[in-house]
Length: 267
Image 1 (spheres, rainbow, N blue to C red):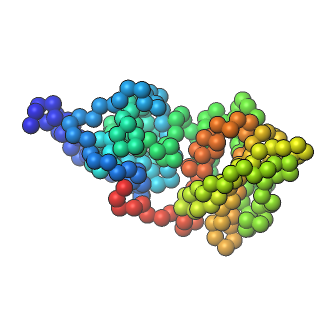
Image 2: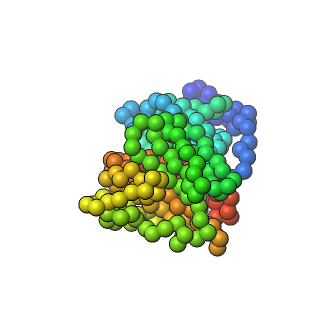
């Protein structure tokens, strides 16, 4: 075995032996491809070459020894963990080369599993949910909901719980017309993400759907069990803002069985 490959092999085995075993369950990033041979090299020109990525997945995210779901798992990074990006590979659907607190490895570039930047956690027993929000945002608790807003900008995310979906109120908002219906999974619960565009005569309430009366509205309604439902409304000015909303719903957790399922044994 060439000396360089031998050193890489020994380094990977050392990381596995010395890494801290993950707690709880972890997600195995989707992928297919075959493991790379030799030392993986980050390809220039990838989506993100430096900076921080934060783990969104409620089940955690595997760091692997190479840019492939079939590469050996080194350790699991928990939801909220901040990883420093040191490179990118387009192999097997895209992978980020990252440095964690103690381990360097590769994570899937699937945007539902991690996001650019740093985040804070909001958690409430009373509202029965937890979510990660960008550090440049703030939140305000109200009797029936929690409103998240950027420190600069008009967008808003409103999250509310109720006894059932009907109690969350009518879908959409006055003056908004539906444009698209996309199926999403929020911590094990499948629902529809419905987007709306503002038309003439749009009205708004202080913190409800369309609170700022902006150009676009997105809504998700989740049935958690027979006595609990969760609503997520995003009022936004720029259509590209949906990426921000995705980070919210991809990191949302709640204390119900659907959100505590075990991870699949294989990618």
